[in-house]
Image 1 (cartoon, rainbow, N blue to C red):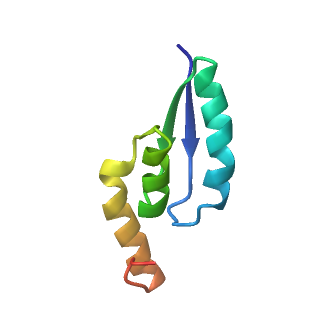
Image 2: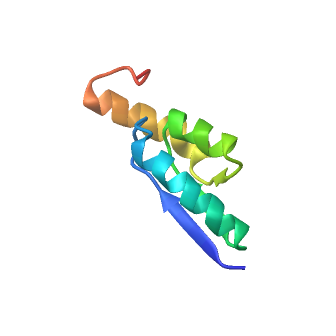
Length: 77
């Protein structure tokens, strides 16, 4: 089985992710194993709701919090 990895930036922006989900769904229907790598909370939720694995989720909270601290916010956005 062929595998494809989709990645996102460590951001809660869903724009590019929502565009990639139909592509990932079609490829999965054609027999590809789809894996996402997204550290932020909002994309992780959407990825799970679409039925795909997120290989970065276990590390995502720490990565997102570190980036949010760097950016000067509390990471709740």
